[in-house]
Image (tube, rainbow, N blue to C red; front, side):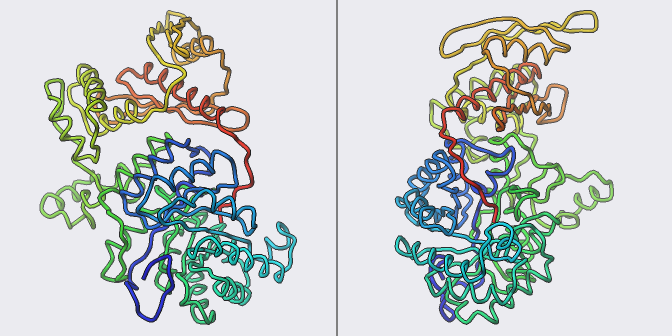
Length: 526
């Protein structure tokens, strides 16, 4: 069975669960997770490598920037279906189709609220009006493609019999996927499973479409609700990497995939995901957004395969299955302690990068190796995490308006903190000094003077990416600008240098943001 086609009596693989990834749409619109076009393309390519079936690339009518990103992803990423979201509005649908028309496998995803709460307080429309407009929207979308998805927003708080009527109508109009969103994360697993079962029982043409679930995690049961829906007949799950999304987030892609993979004995379902790319995909999202997952996060957290208890360690030494229900390698973790240092050659670094999933061009490898040597001179051993930071810093940074050339900081309990900074601004070398209440404050003050910027500092965080006193420091800086914010990251064995890099990275991202057309429209989380 094709996820874009109609289910017909026993055709195809009825035990496959299709993975619809909404990291770049629902995930990206959550606070702190905005991405520019290049970052969205990087993420989309990684999702393609991961093996997702559908990438919801964005909401094209929301802004010119979102439209351009969706269009570029549609033109570039060829294996998955590329979906664009649109309200049940002809203009929205036309704009969405314009963005994905060049996709190898385009999908139009349109939605409209179905709960009486939304109809009364938000739309101010009757059930009849909504049914008519939703059906017309699906019919309009079908003029462009036979791959149309419809979502009744806030479905889990809607009247079940009205949902039956609405879903029957949109399928008759041509919807080939019907998605049932738990928009506000209100449902419990028994309710979610019960609703999906009821729809399969009562909607006469339900088998002419793929049934999907889109669950939010406000009460911490998004994955459980998705599984409940699958058990009652849903065959598509809408989810996001690291579980990001509006409010408490969406169903976590890595969690739902590994739950189905690890417990095939009770579920009997499978996905097309290459699970060995899960950790790499999670890390890429962290690198792009600067927002890490918590250490105890299932599947991809730093502690997911860490064991400190003596009893656990004893069991693992004797037999790993005593305390590990999946192997670290199955989700893409590699051995942390790789023996790379200042005596390591270019070939050794290249081979390690290949194992980590990076096939760099010669010029890219030269840049990475040069930076590797600089870091190796400062610390005894280079870890995978160090290489990840070098890759992110050297290869994937957008063109910079500002560049750090030199930093010298004076501080101490008997000295006034002072930072001298030399930078390149649009190709021109500038330098100045700043004073502050501490070395970080002084560094920021000097950078502000050189760049003439005065953005508010929302967040400043420092982490070590490996153990040891010679570990690289990773600094995250969040700056605010006109009601929006961006994340900057910098890494260096010297935490103050990493601080300057992070602040300047954030400034460069703000420059990129200023250059984008920000004609925003209302977003929806489904």
